[in-house]
Image (cartoon, rainbow over all chains, first blue to last red):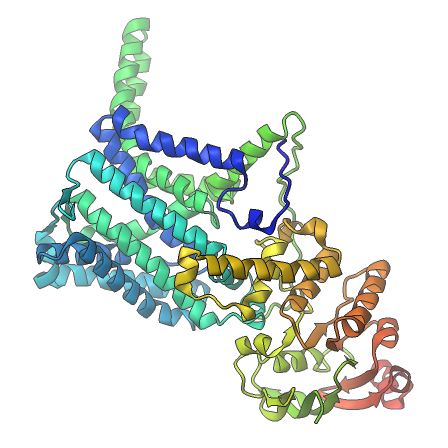
Amino acid sequence: MRFQFKTSYNQDIRLFKDKVDASWYGLLAVAVLIVPALMSDYYVGEATWVFIYAIGGISLMALVGYTGLVSLGHAAFLGIGAYGHAYFLQHGVPWVVSVTLAVAITTASGIVVGLPALRMTGIYLTIATLAFGVIIQEVFSRWESVTHGFAGMPVEKPTIFGVPFHDEWSFYYLCLFFLVLVLWMTRNLLRSPTGRAWIAIRDSEIAAQSMGVNLAIYKSIAFAYSAGLMGLAGALFAHKIAYLAPDIFTILLSIQFLLLVIVGGLGSLHGAVFGAIFVALLPPLIAILRDSIPASMNDAAAAMNIKLLAIIGEGIGNFLKKPGVEAGIFGLILVLVILLEPLGMYGRWVKIRVFFSTFPMYRGATFKRQKSYMRSERLR
Amino acid sequence: MSFFSVDNLSINFGGIKAVDGVTFDVNKGEVFTIIGPNGAGKTTIFNLVSRIYQSTGGKLTFDGTDITNVPPHRIAALGIARTFQNIELFEHATLLQNLLLARHAHKKSNFFSELMFLPSVRRMELEHREAVEKAIDFLDLQQYRDSFIVNLPYGVRKVTELARALCTDPKLLLLDEPSSGLNVEETEDMAFWIQDIRNLLGITVLMVEHDMSLVSAVSDRVLALNYGRPLAMGTPGEVQSHPEVIRAYLGG
């Protein structure tokens, strides 16, 4: 058990709880910084995907996890950011200006989509954002003068102030920089009045209003901020994927982002990053298993002279090759997480930490969920 | 001109007149209680005063300003704070965050300074924290500071709501059934606190309450309502012995 002695109010405002906490994050920073030196380009590229997904995850976390507004149209914001950035780059706009413009456009579209959110709640808002996502996808495929429709749109590699970020490792650092920036900014918002207003809106709109929170303004800010971050993720996404086509930004991608925040753990920035690791690394993991399971089972069968093992391995490999298996596994994991760990991967992480920090005094019921009071006449 | 006045206030929900021509004045530094049977319109009056409902008639005046058409989020900045009958705390936030949110009406930062967490934001946060700590000390909530509201017992939540209302620096405090769900000791504490809020902090209290022993102990004046209409007004003793009030409660 680690004791924390609080002697000043600043201790509750700081980014890191104490020196031990800060040194763990320092260690993590070192580990993340030396990854490209140790790993092959393929894995550095996959790690870059994690960072891009994490920025998108933080975007959706601000909206879903903190403000309590569920959006199923975030792939559209990602697409607006990606296409906007690619379009400006094609027209010779410098990289930094291009990203800024892309983020500004997505922020503006976020405000526009957020306007109905001022009147709608719950499932109705979700359906409105879903409609927005579908409409924008249609726009991507039809507005050929800008997006080139299904012919696709190549995206050149980033060059910032003359410095090329053309290989995997340099782009890795670029994405890492933006992820850290976004984490820092979001954390700043969460420890100041704006973040608290979001949380208040999520938990009780009526009380938030009576405490002086202008619901319309703070919901709009949440939508705008979330969309802006998604636009930034979209700009990086465009470089990473190198070739934009309208069928990338489908409802399935929106669902994947929603899955990310729920599996990661609603209402925590750690959750957004954990969720990104999960969502970005599961497909390559399935791909690796698809090839390695039959091969290794085959080897084992040969070594032990049991034919059955090879047949089972072959079966698993064939099953994983079937279309739709990936989506099925995603869905299965989502169901299991909601049933068994509603707080997501972050919740599990906290439990494991508490287990070790209180060892051997961990009480089995520490995190037992209590039945909460039913509220008879909640004002909505 | 009285401190807070309600003049001929009315609201209809469809054909039901939930509040029908209620008029009363609250003087500065007084504890004014509204009583009445279930469905008499007590909480509706609170929701009208905190502007969650739009009145269909009448006028509300607070501290010399007409607040009949002020938007609900401006009410806190004017100096009116409230608690809720069925606790409306931010359950998945810590007690400290709940109380800090109550300082929202006094914030001076804008979005971009918060995004960068400029030194001015930090200074403001520290000021807010000091104000919050005063409320925590006043209501003995020190040990619960970092607890999440979902993990707190009902009695503590009730006190937390009171603390949150105090953190807005109100001039008028609306307490909606402060003793509901509390045991005898907790109700006694609540009575002491209501008196302290009036005497030490100088805050005027407008209260809805069913527990008549608490009402008699702390209130200066009482208004009895039934079916949205005022029945009687006066000292707790006068109102309790008023024949109309007895008939409303006991029938006949």
